[in-house]
Image 1 (spheres, chains in turn purple, yellow):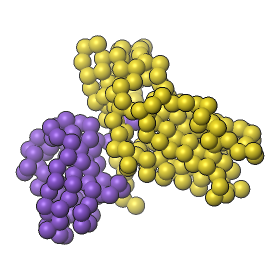
Image 2 (cartoon, each protein chain N blue to C red; image 1 turned 90 degrees about the vertical axis):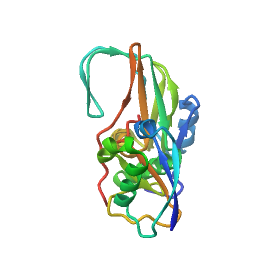
Image 3 (spheres, each protein chain N blue to C red; image 1 turned 45 degrees about the vertical axis):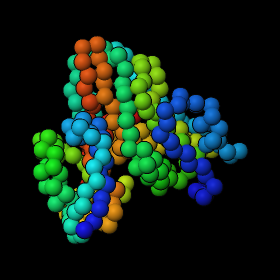
Image 4 (cartoon, each protein chain N blue to C red; image 1 turned 45 degrees about the horizontal axis):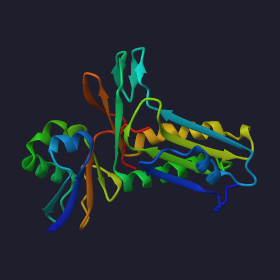
Length: 82
Length: 162
């Protein structure tokens, strides 16, 4: 098993009603697998997940990417700084 | 030409943006020009338009509340600075600052400063690239609070896999 910490920001944090979550996932789980687990744990996230960005260890990540051991994952909407 | 001694300064901060202090950080003895872009909170939007892909109608803004994923945001600001260096090797110093928290109209929220020996080196374009790129890849978000409600502003840029 792989223990990962997931951070939520902006609209995703609001929908998830929390700013972080710790999860145990299987060792070779991908970002797509994680999204499925998250939808089960927090159904409110389902509607927004298709336009949610994901980062692993502070770098943009994609559905097919495998999540490394102890990763810091973040989910957030397209950015709007400036 | 490009030197490892050229200063880069990036920061996500809740403090007021201090232009003079930043300019001091990116000014070398060889510097003769600085191009500075700063954006501020607009209190009154008088025409319909588009920002970050969202259409908006004329309206008033009470304040904007900014939030950042600070460690990633500062790493991505460094990436923006590195990209500027790759495109304009005459750029000497680069400062990229994003202020977060509750920010009211007329308050500067972001600042990009690029310095060079002369003004005709591409330094204006470098600063322009910096703000455009920040709005694409630096994980910062803002919620707009208006007299009659509030709304998160969402961008539209989706990063592609390298």
